[in-house]
Image (cartoon, rainbow, N blue to C red; front, side, top):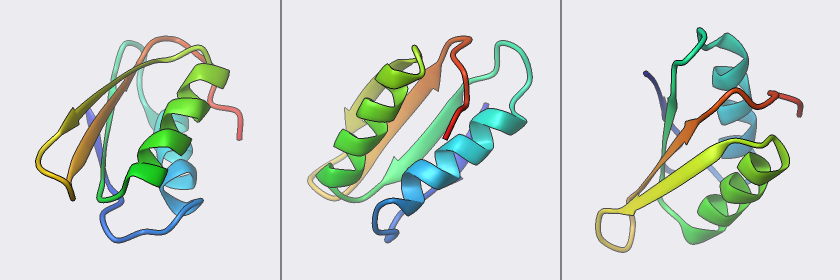
Length: 77
């Protein structure tokens, strides 16, 4: 699993960072993205949908969200 710490980053940086990790991952490897705002969550979910990736979200309070991106989707920007 590749972990991306995008805490404190304003959009579009969390999406850019996630895309970079998706391009670098090995077959079957998932990407876990940590963000601290709901706008980043929404943008990452939209990106995952466009790339045919599965996206699960776990909220750890109101300021920490963990998104796990899995699947064989494309890592197009």
